[in-house]
Image (cartoon, rainbow, N blue to C red; front, side, top):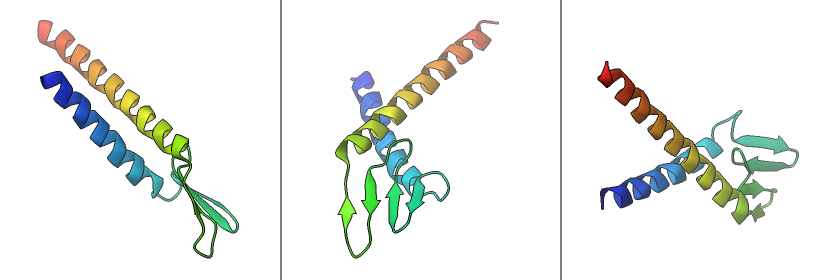
Length: 88
């Protein structure tokens, strides 16, 4: 049961980071006049002016999976490092 909660937490964290990073200037916003594209590493929202938007769903899913894997690797590395230093 605890593992399921960790997966849900990582998924929620990945979702939030995807949204937050997308609106950070210089990282998640790309401007190609007159369009603005949001998302890093893949775009998942485009604003084309006059109220026209595009929502590339695959970019959004890719970003969530990307950040999920990054957080999973960081957690596993942190646990291994912690375990190594606690042995000594």
